[in-house]
Image: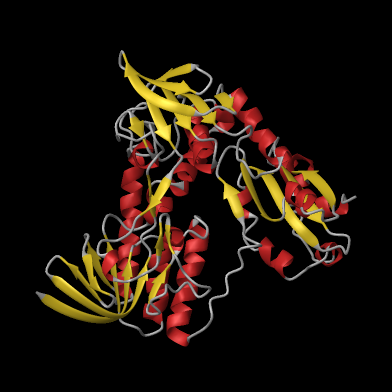
Length: 444
């Protein structure tokens, strides 16, 4: 049995663990990272990145007249397996970066012996600090359990060797809508079932409406306000029963609802406070055992890769410099990688109405900018929400690649920047970002 001693042991090689490890190592600490499958986590391997990657290529085709495109010339004829080759390249780059930082990477699944000891294969790892970053995994709901073949999760959806004729997607959430866009663009007939009365619950109607319009143009059948109660196989087809008695037939069913924590083995030996769906942490992302942290989806705060990355960096700073973790979840940038994309930061209109916060709003279409005209952009807009004191409360966009514009906008809201201050800032002309300025000029 080989024994190794480290300053920091990180369990999980997704975004949270990866960035935490790099930051700790760059600060001079000896770091071990354990990953049971592949580096990158859900977002890189089976989530937003593969969806956006393939959609980007599909959108690059002139006028959408053919499904043949640059990197995946055989899609949809031979399915999505080509993407896996690219992921291997990205994973290898991540591995090299970790090794260059002198981080020891262990692949496989081990178990905790106590709060400072972890065993994997023939290695016993001792560490002063432990960071758990193991994320969550798909689970589905009662009567909607995946079998990885005909009833699938996102993991199988991006690795299909043959595209189905019809796919039924359970859940009109972010994941469900992103995959609906993807499969529709690949020529698959899509049926989308959402138990609430609207898609992307929690978003303003004017942001979701362009997406629904696109879905209808692509022939996506949408069931809203109905719940899937059971899935059965009949004559080689998957039959989804709805709570109104209706039945839907398809070749595959993609379940995007229901996730459970990926608790690492041996958790019961740590004395860490658990709830059924998370590891409980304080404001510094520490558990009740002060040498053990939990970051990313496993702590149940917010299941987003960019949140996980920031938590990883913040925890590394806490370990290195005893610096308090300061996470601003209020001005959190969000994006939905559908066609069209939805992205924004700050309050949405429904929240301001619910909280009875006075506001004004302004819109501007990307098509009406000079750059939008030159690029022949037909869709998308910017929406700004402004307080009575002229401070920006929310900034939201719909359109192609709008996720690229929103990253640093949260800082404007966090710092209380006013419309007048933004108007005084020079914006490149011609550019699509001018739509932000125009929307501010249209506030009323």
